[in-house]
Image 1 (cartoon, rainbow, N blue to C red):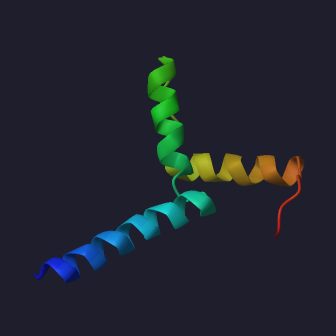
Image 2: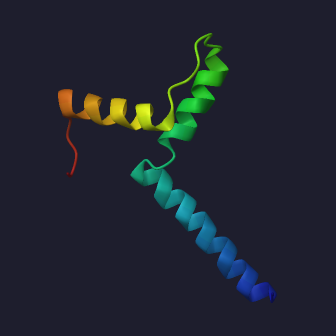
Length: 67
């Protein structure tokens, strides 16, 4: 792969990570990092449980958001 193409691909991956962070796609990964750092004894929520809890909290406590 040429150096120019590699730079474009790297830039695109960086932008995709940034956009995912803005959209909240990395929320579960952040939850797992926090859970591990906090030293909880019980197992973490599964990804499905996490997103169900996340949407339930948003629905029961609406805040200013676009959608």
